[in-house]
Length: 171
Image (cartoon, rainbow, N blue to C red; front, side, top):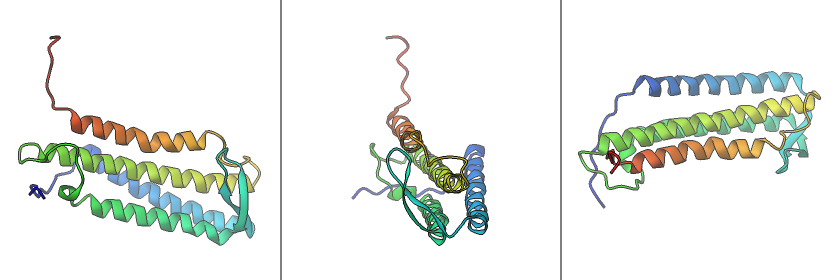
């Protein structure tokens, strides 16, 4: 196994803003869930099919699973981001490129963490809106949006990681 440099990265303003947005979203997930638990009837939709229609119902306490899972993912990603030297990379990590590669990888995880939190808050919100009759499920847009929210940061991170920073100057 290759020996990679262990670096302590300093957060850029973008990274600090992503972390702050993650904390706000996590708090919003918990607040929305607690509000929904107080307002919703005992039986709520707990599963949606691929077209976004509710296809299974259960106890509203099941809703608590979502913020708990969101919190576990948030804490896990936050903890994992402290150790970018253990990540898998598509390029060989050297002392010369470690800071750049680690920054790209940790930023990608921050965007993914944010995307996952957005997905969770959408699910909780639409469960609430479905029960009160404002919507009829998640809608057909939810699955493509979820894929986009997860794939876009991943693809951008991979492209940045593979970019050697070479200029072609039109040649």
